[in-house]
Length: 207
Image (cartoon, rainbow, N blue to C red; front, side, top):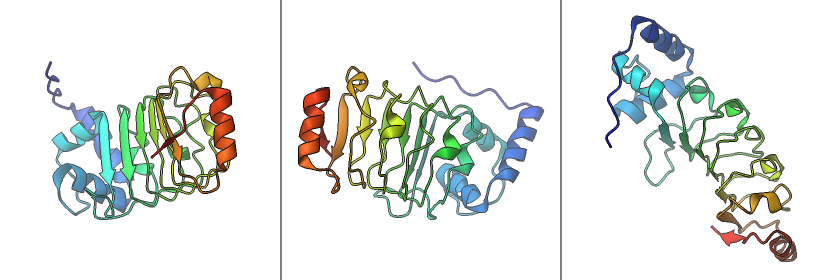
């Protein structure tokens, strides 16, 4: 079934979109223009494009070091997406993101891809109860404890971080968690991995 086309934006909606655009940082303006219009500038996009951005479900911003980049600048934060109400899939990879706390209220997120950034913590995801897929491999994250109550997760990819314990993932995750890619992590001891697998019956996979 094809997705029905978006209705034309109203004057009030256009006003709201323009106000949102004005609030963006220059890097985020450029990122949106590159991702949606393939233009490397910070100018106002057409109203139809603003309407599309506001109502889109998937957003992808792959930084300049990505295999298939669609932005030429490295973003430092997630401020550009926090007001968008309909985002279900968010891809912000190969940037300089250091924190996820800005998206703590984005409870409609189903898939979050933030691998290859500069994250030291995944605090901010604790209340994202709709989240099913979380990829934060290739960062500097030390703890999985913010995931303790996210027992609906189906895929977690946390390889190549600074994780030394799998505390935060337990028996309550087993029913939903199909793919747990936690290897390799240089600070994670093999004996602890084996003990975790024995206790939880969750397989630790290499990613």
